Amino acid sequence: MICLTLMEDTIEKNFAVFMENSSFVDIIELRLDMLIDPLLVEPELVRSKFNFPVIITCRLVRDGGKYSGNEYQRRDILYQFSNAGFDYIDLEMGIVYPEVEEAAHSHNTRIIRSYHNFEGIPDNFEEIFRELASVVGEIPKVAVFLEGSCQVYKFFKIIEKIHDIEEKIVLGMGDFGIPTRVLYKKLGSFLSYCSVPGRSGAPGQLTPDKMKNMYRSDCINNSTLIYGIAGNPVMHSGSPNFHNTGYKRSSLNAVYIPFLVDDINYFFKLAGVLPLCGFSVTVPFKVDILGFLDRKSPEVVRTDSCNTVLRNGGMWEGYNTDLEGFLSPLAAIENLKDRLHRAAVIGAGGAARSVIAALKSLGLEISIFNRSEERGRILAEETACSFFPLEKFDLLSGYDLIVQTTSVGMIPDVEKTPVQGYRFHKDQLAYDIIYTPLKTKFLREAESSGAEIIGGMDMLISQGALQFEIFTNREYPQEEQKESS
Ligand code: ATR
Image 1 (cartoon, rainbow, N blue to C red):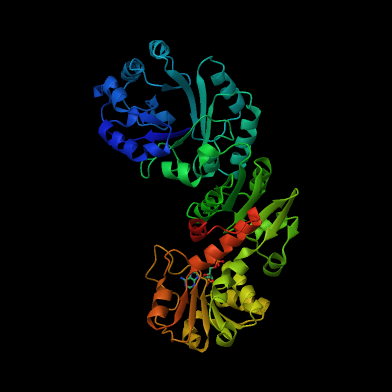
Image 2 (image 1 turned 120 degrees about the vertical axis):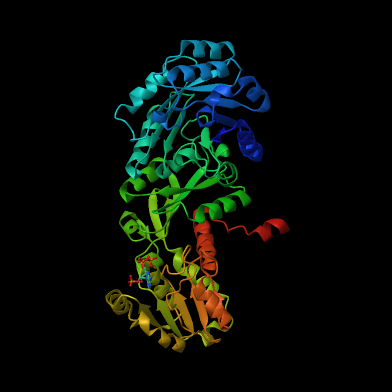
């Protein structure tokens, strides 16, 4: 079940959020601790207003909540609500409220017995869980903050050990814990919490729409193929939306999840445990990943950079779809061979490496323009290109193709360009690999001078579609194909 945590300060506001999101979720959690004055709320009125399964929670500050009144009042609030016939009531481990429990039992309200730890996974995690689970009729819940890839791996391993406890709620908080929220069914958790933007019930909660429509987390079962993207940062990535949309359109039982990674060793261990069928690799792991591959495609060997990993017969195979993804929008240019002879690459980082390898395959003469002379010269020497310091950008007028590979101009700095003051001419082709915004200042200036432009979204889609093919052995389903079929 997908559970929407309601965090507003009045019942009316909570009801409005519920109405907007009810189609995405199966149950709601009403956080009484967030209300302005929970003592003044009439439980029976709330019960009749929300004609839906409800969990009642009044979370203490020590457990990540806002409740700051005294213990007696909290017990009173929970007692009143226990008498109103809600479906579930969440009581923290160690809280002894016999009258609340009795009232809950007499109204068939199930007790969720919860344990929260914001410091990470305690050494006696399994013991705590077994203790919670020992009370007949109660549902044990454990929420721990996951600090890094090592803890994510450890979490999945421990949950394997408590497989025998059938009814439970388990989750890892924080961005590292996001896979535990999406894969809640795989962990044997009977629900996963989510919340609306700006009203997070706990760190790492996704939105109801994403849980239901993007990750289809309530449909995940033992046959679901798991893919993902490993990076840091990774939450901004457009790849989960792209791949999950593809799986949905192709009716594939597969899911693609963002994995925030701080230790590639543990990420690989986790990939083995889940197991992952394949994953995308983004900044800063495209080079670090090479040491873990059993096989490398010719493009990976050529660029020393890998953005796609497939598990094939127990082997990890590395591919580089950035190269072809970069070339694909260029292939659509008319008279490419006659038009392009000289290419300028702005930047000398990791992205520039893949771009240069791709341009070499077109047989172009390439020059690197970079801010730092040392870095630019080293790459130029390695790749047999010429080098110019970026301040000599006037020289760009002698090139047919100018590729922008730095992060200058990316959201939020949309009024920046690395070649401030340069005037493009109409025979030039300007290519920016940034995709947020869709049209950077670099491209806007090129376009206003009559030059042809290519934005980074084209490259993102091409490299993603190639990845999709590697992962699934199918072509990426474009919307138009679906509509015409
Ligand atoms: P990536 O892997 O995305 O290419 P990177 O390896 O950090 O990232 O490389 C960033 C590139 O953008 C470098 O060429 C960098 O220039 P320096 O070598 O001088 O650092 C370039 N870059 C970043 N910020 C820049 C700026 N404000 N102006 C010009 N170039 C910039």
